[in-house]
Length: 280
Length: 116
Image (tube, rainbow over all chains, first blue to last red; front, top):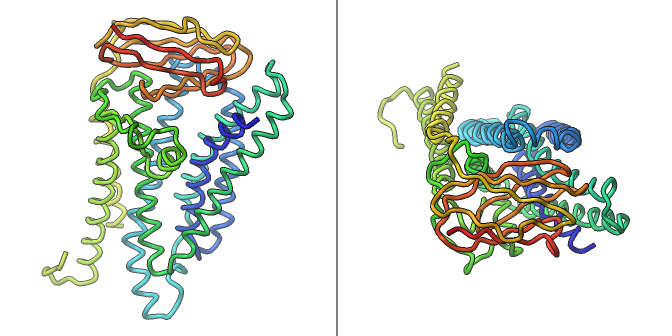
C-alpha cells in the first residue's frame, strides 16, 4: 500500500505544486477560483479520456503516439506560461502604477487568467492520465488486494495535494508587493522545467537526435528519486542526468521569455515617455 | 495592437528555436531491441545492445496491468498500457550497464541494458 501511495504521490506532486503556484500568482484576480477550477476539472475529464484511449494512442505513429501527445501538451502549456510571464511582468508594472494613483488593489485590473487556466488543465491532464491508468490497473487488472491499493492511491493523492496547498499558503505569506516577483519567477522556472521535459520527450520518441549525451551526473549530490530531488524536479525541473538538449531547451526558455519581457517593457516605456533617452 | 504584434513575434521566435532543435530526424537504420513485460517482470532481464548507437527499443506489455518503463541512467520514462507495444529510443550509450525498472512493480520488474 505504501508503494502505491508513493507512486500516486509522485504523479500528483507536479500538478499540485503547479496549481499551488498558479493560485498564488493569481491572488486577488476577479473570478480566478472559477477559472482555475474550470482548468482543473477539464484537465481531469481529459485525463480520464486520455487514460481510456491510452492503448490506442500508444500504438499511434509506430509506438510513439504517447510521446507525440505529450509533446503537444508540453508545448501548449509552455506557451501559456511564457505568455503569462511576459504579460504580467509588463502589465503588472503598469497596473501597480495605476493602482498607486487610484489607490486601488494592484490586481484589480488583470484580465481573466485564461492562459494559466489552460496551463493548469494541461498539467492535470498529463499527470492525471498516468494516475488514472495506474489506478485502473487495480480495478480491471489481475493485481490482488485492490482495496488496499485504492486506499494507498487515495492517500498518495491526498499527500500530493496537501503539498500543493502548503505551497499556496507558503507563498501567500509573502507581502503582496513582493508576491508578484516571486510567483513570476516560479512560473518562469516551471516553464523552463516544461521545456526540459519537452526536450526529453522529443529525444525519447526519436524525433530529435541532437545533443543526446548526458552532460553531468549529480546523483551523488542529489538523487532524482530522493524526496528533495523529486520535489525540485516538479518545481524547477531538476534532473540528475540531463542531456545537452534538455539544458539547451531550459536555458532557451528562460532567455526567450526574458528577452520578450524586456522588449515589451521597452515598447511600453517608449509609449509612456516618448523621450528617446531611456534608462534600461 | 502593437503589443500584440510584439508578443506574436516572440512566440514565433520560441517556435523557431524549437524547430531548430528538430533538425535531425530519426533514421530508419537504428538497430532494434525488444523487451517483454510478463508477470511484472522484464524479459530478458539483461538486454545487450550495441554501444555508441541509438537503439530503437520496443517494449511489449503482455500483462493486464499498466507499467511504466523508467530509468534514471538512460534518462527515460514511458508508460506501457496493458497489452500495448511502445517504442522508446535510447542512447547512443557509452559501453556500460544501465539499470531500468518498472515503476509500478519495482519489487519484481527490474532489468539492465548492457551496451557493448
